[in-house]
Length: 207
Ligand SMILES: Cc1cc2nc3c(=O)[nH]c(=O)nc-3n(C[C@H](O)[C@H](O)[C@H](O)COP(=O)(O)O)c2cc1C
Image: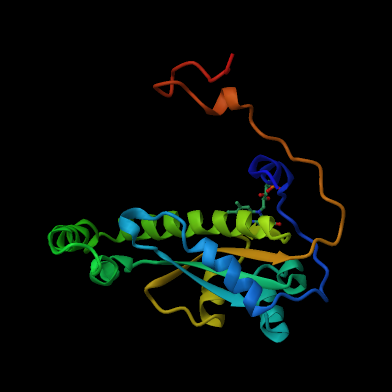
């Protein structure tokens, strides 16, 4: 499918065929694409928890305001952001020439160390980009998805055993859509959301 067609067709899907399952092999193929997402300094501030087990999905649903799609989907994925991803710099840069490594690793540490707000911003940025890759990657493989922020972060963190260096950024439910696709919801016109040169510049008209 053409990428633009895929973008046009994608919807946040809320109802799924509960009997439809996804294999670990299918999930692995999908995540092989997802991990190619970009991230600042290539730090890959993401970790995914793929919940397929029926009993776990039921509990996950309870922690997500009871939203049925968390239980009915084939897999409910918690996209987590890693607050201390900068600590992986040495591992990530180990294959690079020594001069690059010696420059980048201390620079990355200095950039993030002790800066809680920046660490959180980056965890959310990185995980969100990966979540978008996950949704388009899944659409490319014939799966419907839905991003979700409607959950209790503390309950979800406890249930899925997150460590203190991880924050729950978003749930992405994935499965086979049950109902007919919804019509496209309202979007602000491009002209209103793309300004030329400065925020008070003219809106992009194209022609
Ligand atoms: C970060 C984020 C959180 C969302 N949380 C929920 C949610 O908890 N429950 C839900 O039903 N939809 C949720 N949505 C879906 C949005 O309502 C949906 O993306 C938006 O209405 C646009 O519709 P579309 O994605 O089908 O074009 C969320 C979307 C995003 C990006």
